[in-house]
Length: 391
Ligand SMILES: [Zn+2]
Image (cartoon, rainbow, N blue to C red):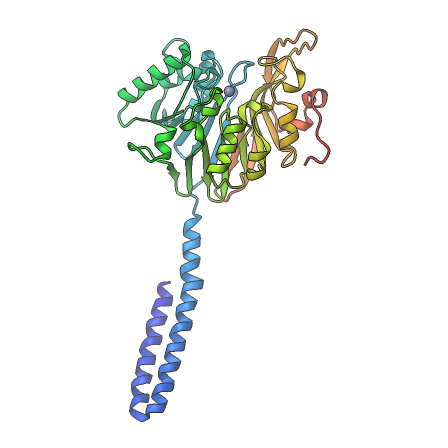
């Protein structure tokens, strides 16, 4: 640009000189020269605007400082639950810490492997169910997430129905963490949405990488279903988007779609562990996900004895299949006894799933057990069907 403006100045000086000479010689020639100068100035201006200024602005807007990784962590047991660690550089965001208090024994070392400075810059608790918050607490009071990491900004559900012992303990420890940690803050999703009391609707993690708290009406309205209070977040890295909706159910998904201009997403964490009541068409048709990760123990009878409704459900698979075959699942039940509706243990399905988006925006998926997509697994072939017309 410096070169261009130098050339422009030279041009202008030359034109000024020519105009002075022309004015002395003849007024007609003078007018023609002025017109030529004006046209030249207009062309030069347009050239600068379209090819220099606009190009620089566009490039400036999409600068991404580095890669973004999203890890769906295994929880050390055969229970459904969420724990998602999102990282760029030395900045981490942890969404939830399920599924049981004992999961902390698996999660704390797993998080320490990636969060080497001991600081979780942002911690989000989507809703007050055990399978999302128990490992924040841990079993002994010294082994939970809050006791092992400095949590700087904690973003919570705005409403809750439950007053279980775990949610009371979670809230006590969270408040202790905030009061004893220098610079720590605690906000609800609603405060974030309203940019109130120091909370922000959007947080920048690095250049070109940010996350925002999306609005849905159950931050303010009551629901008989705790899941509908789930805090929803959209992460953006350059042109790529990643959506997390906790255990949000259909009514919440409808509100989410109505309240936000949702983009196409590279990654969607399947709502509510792949339940038939979440990941509905109303949401999927907006976000048209390329990759769907499910945090559950496939085939477990934890919540139902109806085969097709065990996580990940046939209904969720039927809906997601319209958009992608790239479905991944963390954990798998073992010793599935269909006659007695029992399982004997658990193993990894994909294991801890890592979705990496490079600085250039190329997205890859890797499971620490294997990279097999759900529809190609043995469990799927025995227990589920891929719908006709699916991807
Ligand atoms: Zn859950």
